Structure formats: C-alpha cells, structure tokens
Image 1 (cartoon, chains in turn purple, green):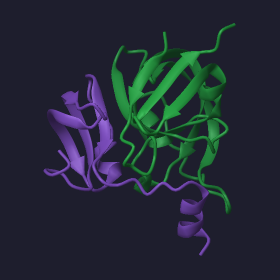
Image 2 (cartoon, rainbow over the protein chains, first blue to last red):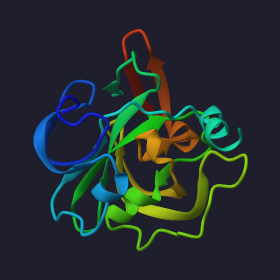
Image 3 (cartoon, rainbow over the protein chains, first blue to last red):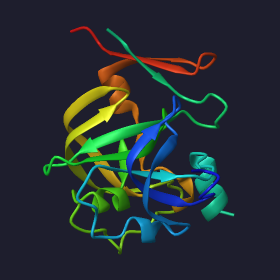
Image 4 (cartoon, rainbow over the protein chains, first blue to last red):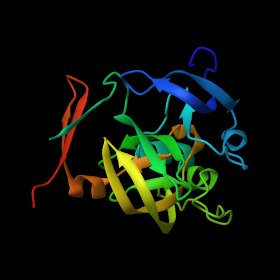
Length: 70
Length: 133
C-alpha cells in the first residue's frame, strides 16, 4: 500500500498486516494526502484502520521547535 | 505470560498498532509511538472525533509556544488495546497533533506505570507484562 498510495493517509477495511503492523492487503475506503479528508465524518459503520504511508516526522520537542520556534 | 510485540527497529521510532473499541462495538486501529517523553498517553482529537468518541474538535485551541502538543481535555476510553493488553476505562488526554507526525497516539508513561516494559531493539521486540501486585 505504501507503493500504491505514497505519503497518504488511508482509511482501510478488511485488512491484514505484516509482522511489523504494516497493512499488506485491504480495502482502501478513503485515501488522501490531506488528513482532514480521510478523517471526515460520517465514519464507516464497520471495523477499520487509519494509516499513514509516509515517514513520521515526529521528533518530540525537537520536532515542535523546528516547526514553531525558528 | 508476557506479551511480545514486534516493531521495526529500522524506523526512527518504536511505532505500534493500537486498537480502540467504541460503545457501538466497532474497532478502530491507529498508529502510535511509544513515547517515554510523554507523561501521559495522548490521542489526536481528529482520530477520536472520527471514531465517534469525541463530539467535536476544539477549533479555538492552539499549541502554546514551547509545547509539542496541546492537551485540552481528558477522556475515558471504553477499551483500548496496547501491545496486546486490553485496558478498560483508560483516561487519556485529547490533544491537537501535528498532521505530519503520521500517528494518532503517543503512548506515555502511564502505560509504563501499569506494565513492565522491556524493549529489545536488537530483536525488534517489546516485551510487556503487568506488574505483579
């Protein structure tokens, strides 16, 4: 899914994960580079997973400082 | 018996899959980072809202200077699953998350207070078990 939807947010149902928890197969109900678009209501009335296929830029306090303090 | 959770040690973080069950009986899976720098577990307001457990997102809340996230309320989650442990009625913080983080939860030290956590980075394993009372 990372190859099919690079750097996108996904809402996926009927999925399977690999040993690291990455989604290997599933039905992509929504996908977008805009998180708001994928997380919008109404939500699906079934079990689902939210996933981001890009690299997390979370770096703790350093991350915040780089984006907001300099 | 301890639970063994596998993670990818080549990633920058210890990134996990968590699961939350709602009162409607639906399971929502999310990505989380095990964050020893977070005193408490935090969830993104956007995820909680999308899952139907948070009525609305506080648009007036902004991240204060010097903070990474902006916690603005607490919420009791009916049932969540972290590293294979089911935790009921867990109090978590609701926060604004930066979208580029790519996750919806930071698992904080409150989890470590409930469970003995051993991280084997070489093997890419997190070994967790409740503390003996």
